Structure formats: C-alpha cells, structure tokens
Length: 100
Image (cartoon, rainbow, N blue to C red):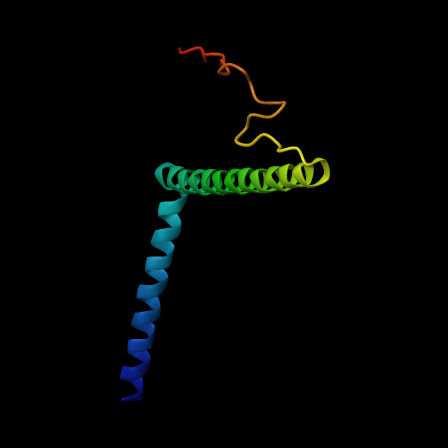
C-alpha cells in the first residue's frame, strides 16, 4: 500500500512537471513570445488610457475650481465650457499623417 501511494505521488509529480515544462517551452517559441508581448502592449495601452482619463478629469475639476474662484473674487461670471482665453475661436486643424 505504501508503494502504491508513492507511485501515485510520483506519477502526479511527473505529470505536473511535464505540463509546466511544456508551457515554458511554448512561451519560448516565437508565437508564445509574440503572445506575451501583445498582452503586455494591451495592458500598457489600457494603463496609459486610464491615466489620460484621470488627468483629464483632474484638469476639468481644477478648471471648475478656478472658475469658481474667479467668480467669487471678482463677482464676474467666468466663462464656462471651454470658452475661456485659451479656447480656439475656430476648430483646431490637425496635421494629417502620411499614409504609406
């Protein structure tokens, strides 16, 4: 009975090690490396996107605080909705990317 137990433990350990080794080998192939790189790029893009959203939210919050402060100190209603000093009177034209 003792031998059968250790045989089972050995078989399970062998199966686990074989699976782990197979996964490691798959990750070392070009397609495995590309998959890992793709996942890393997607994760980075998501992090950059959420950072940008947080920055924009913070900018809007601070802008509202400044508008409120101007109204409080001058009794003059500050322009709202991006119609301030830095807002463009006409739409902003962006350079087109060269397609090639």
